Length: 102
Image 1: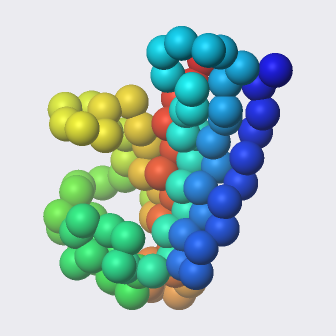
Image 2: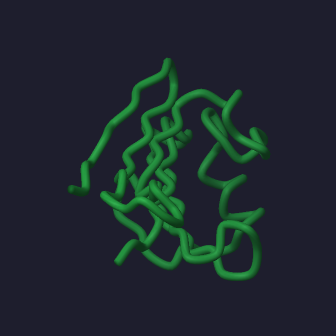
């Protein structure tokens, strides 16, 4: 039986599935919410970063709301993931990494 799990750490939430299989991959990460820069490889584009700095580094977002910008990753290790920058005012409050799962 497949199971969905949320694991919480200070500044990090992982949402993943544990597959009911005996062989091969047994878990698939679906989403990670990051609100502490210690979990980011590039904290200069993390929590506390300005909207302007995000756009200067990554260009215009693919999708935009009043408090969220999203970018789809295509050409590196995060391929197949979407990164959402959630803003409070003009600064990043937290990021969500979302992976496509089938």
